[in-house]
Image 1 (cartoon, rainbow, N blue to C red):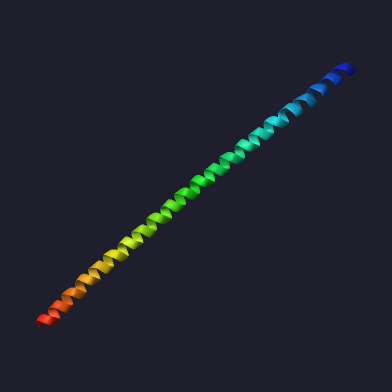
Image 2 (cartoon, rainbow, N blue to C red; image 1 turned 90 degrees about the vertical axis):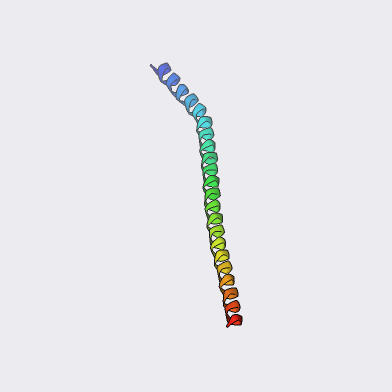
Length: 81
């Protein structure tokens, strides 16, 4: 009976040593996966921020162009009158 216990303890020790490297590999893969996911999330957030900036600049440019047209019309009308 004691030989069976010794074999069981030896098998469990071997299993524990074998699983520790697997656990390390899984932890590494999990860290890399999280890192890549965060990078992709940041890229999307930066793209959205850039798009919002472009939309704001376009709206301001259009507003400026329209204001310039109105100013020119006012000046011409004033000179005519």
